[in-house]
Image (tube, rainbow, N blue to C red; front, side):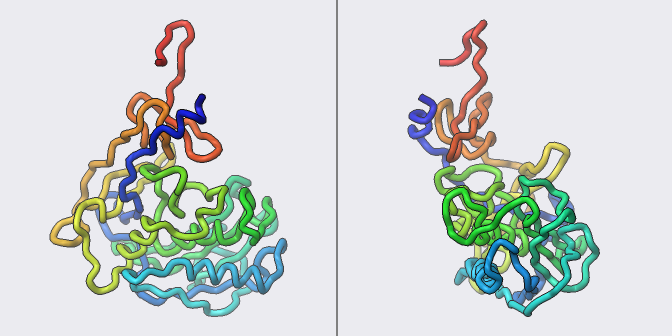
Length: 294
């Protein structure tokens, strides 16, 4: 019955790409201050894969982030042999490095497949360095693109989004077609290629000449991080064709009982989102002693 109900309707899908400001609701946007961003790969890549193919898969993952409305290029600067990355707690060294961590230096647990750690200035928000670490300690990596595999591109494209400034999309998307920047890698390999919402975020952060917003939906939501995890602070508003000024309004959930959801925020109060194999449905806890469910 639950599976049948999940097919009834999808949540209203709105623009949901997210960024951060240095002061949460004020300050500079966290992003690179240049349109040419370099990176260095560790020459070993993942021990589970042929080295040359694995390295090329990472390069191809950078290439996925391409859009005519964006003015940014990612430039392969060759190899770096260090695994002392900002993403594993080390100080910066002026290089943007990507590496697989294959030993106990990985301390984030098996649930985390990759981690990106940018250094940025306050209050400007300009990123000066960002490293990406992949969990080779607790996972066997693949390039097969098979469902439920720990696929290089399925994870790398997401982490590269963090590398240039995008944050997680917490809600307000079709769970059958999630954005790359959803909070978890899609088991059906849909994180391998950015969705339009992801590319909209790229173009906002690094706009090509002529970029402008038409409505608030063209502007980003703002992400905060607290004791309970990530949450929406509000969003930037569109004014005069540009996104600026803080609005604490966050889209309200529109999905009712039995309707599809990607997270709790999609559901009308008091319902919550119960995960299924793909996406979830809005439901509530039923009390048998005092029936409260239709």
